[in-house]
Image (cartoon, rainbow, N blue to C red; front, side):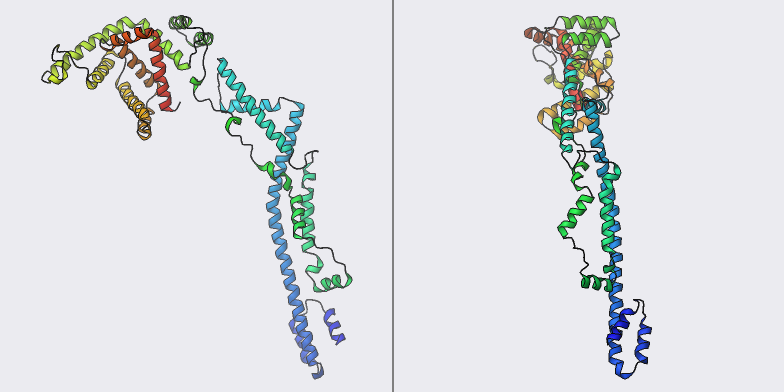
Length: 443
C-alpha cells in the first residue's frame, strides 16, 4: 500500500482519469480495493488543487481591481500633498504669499472693483485680510496631517503602495496556495510564515494607501465671513463730501452740470455721506435747474388743457366736482391720468416709462404689504425694461410732482416746513427711486 501511495504522490497533478482507470482495470483482484482507493484519492487530489488554483486566480484579479482603484486615490493624495508642501515653501520664501492669493481671489469675485472711496478701500482690505487669515489657518491645519516634516519625491511617496501590492501578490500566489504537496510540506517542516491578523492587514493597507493624508482631499471651501463677499450693490459704499466732489470731477464731462452739483455738495454739512444714487440724484437735480423755467411753462399748459377736457367729458357727473366751487376733486384716477398726460405731452416720459412706473408702484405696494408672490410678478415685469427707461421714468415722476400746478405748491409747503430745499428733495427723491428700482431688479 505504501508503494501505491508513493506511486500516487509521484504522479504529476496532470494524471488523467483514463490513466488511473486503466491502471485499475488491468490490476488483479487482490489489488482492486487498493487501486480503487488510489483512484479516488487521486481524483480528490486533482480536484482540490484545481479549486485552489482557481481561487488564487480569482484573488489575483480582485487584487488588481483593488490596486487600480486605490492607485487613483493615492495619486490624488500625492497631488494634494505636493501642493501643500509647495505652498509651504512658497510661504516660507514670501510671507505675503497668502495675501497675494487672497487679493487675486478678491479680484476674481469682484472684477473692476472701484477704490474711489475710503469705505470701498476699507471693504476690500477687510475682505482680503479675513480671507488671508482663513487660508493660513487652513494651511497650518493641513500641515498637521500625516508626515509632512520632510518633502518626499513621488517615488518615495508611492513606494509603500507598490511594496504592499507586490507583497499581497506574493502572498496570494504562494506555492502552498496552489499545491497540496507544498501545503503539507510547510506543515510538516514548520516552514510557515505567521499570517497577519485582519487588523494588521488593514493597518498595512492604510500605510500603503497613505490614509493619513485623506483629509487633504477635502476641497478648500470657505463659508460666512471667511469667504470673499460679492459686492453687488454699489450703494453700500459711502462717499464723503471730498470723495463725492472728486468723483464728479473725474466722471462728469459736462462742466456746467458738474460745477452746479459740486456747488450744492459743498454747501452740505461736513459729515454728509453720499451713496452713488445720491450723487446721481444731485446731478439730475442740477440738470433740471438749467431748463426748469421752460419745462414748468409746458407742464402748466398741458395741465390746463387736460382739466378742460376732463370737465367736458365728465360734466354730467357731479360726484367728480366740488359742489360749491366746481373744482375738480383730485381722485386717484384723475391725478394719475393727469400725470400720464403731462409726461406724454411734455416729453419727460413716454409709453414705456408710464408702464414702468405703474409696475414699480404695484411692486412697491406689494412689498410693503408683504405680498411676496405679487411682488415677484411685478419684479418680472420691471426686469423687461432697460435701465434707460427706468432712469427716465424716475426723473419724469419727480418733475411731474414738482412742476405740476396742483402737486407743486403742496410739495413746496412741505419742504418749507421741513427746512429742505427743492434741490435736496429732488436728489433724495431720485436716489430713493433708484434704490427701489435696484432692489426690484436685483442690482
